[in-house]
Length: 152
Image 1 (cartoon, one colour):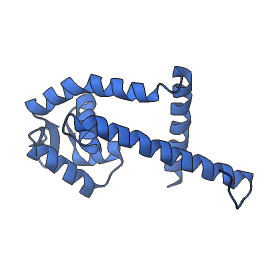
Image 2 (tube, helix red, strand yellow):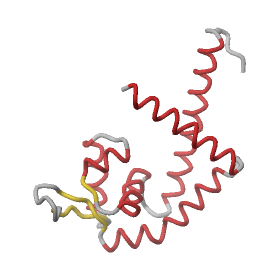
Image 3 (cartoon, helix red, strand yellow):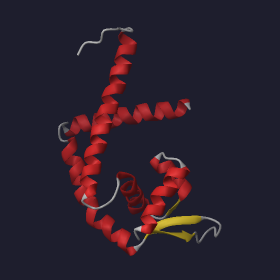
Image 4 (cartoon, one colour):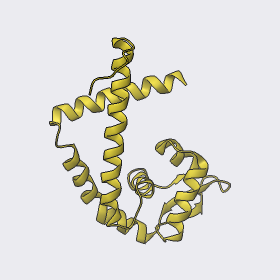
């Protein structure tokens, strides 16, 4: 579809890139959420489990940084995981004032049973791109993300 208003090649290219990125992200997230429904978990909850599964117990601040979300949002996600018996809050052994979020045995079992299935699902979604294209897209997205973080 042709745009009726042109703003110049540089602006049109940047806007087109942004729109395509947002549409691809929204579609990817929708498919991700649909896949995770079978495990009775939301994408945000699964992201917390994935962080804990790969990085071990962490405090709320570190979880927020890893997931790029606010403390209020993270509190709701973790509260729901606690309610479902998948994670627990425990005092840090290094600093008793700090509270860590860690797996319960039920949460660890869920992560262990679902991670490979979920990774295979994401791999299947990405197969429209060759492995080389996936690597290039990852490189470009990282470059863009790092540059934008430096500006703020």
